[in-house]
Image 1 (cartoon, rainbow, N blue to C red):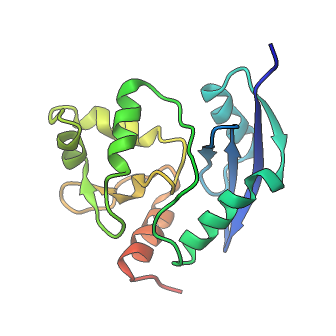
Image 2 (tube, rainbow, N blue to C red; image 1 turned 135 degrees about the vertical axis):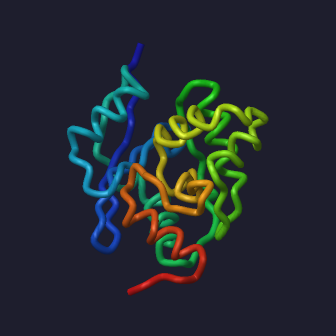
Length: 172
């Protein structure tokens, strides 16, 4: 059996660098900004243990274009396919995140209610934290019930930037 190939490339935007990766089915990983290659490789291998990583900017260019357009405020939705792997519960939560409209925020409790598991707030938080595709699956749109900006795999500074971008309150 042939080993699965996962194409990857570094996407640079402003002061941030992201490792992004795709399978033949779609985008499968967007790293935290500034993540090391080793951490990126480990993250991808957890999701696709039999895969080989191949640097290929050309294969990632359409995704780079969409991410750049989004971060520049020129795009509100992503149209290219995503190939995420998680538990059925994680995938249910990630699908719910895609229902949160651009410019809106939901609490962890609201996401738990959206998937009809209102008592699973902590599990929802864990599933959100395991989202392998930052930005494209908008986990940044989830905040604390009290309105506070909570943790984010991409860092609080990036979460604030993304929420500001979507609300029209970007700085700089």
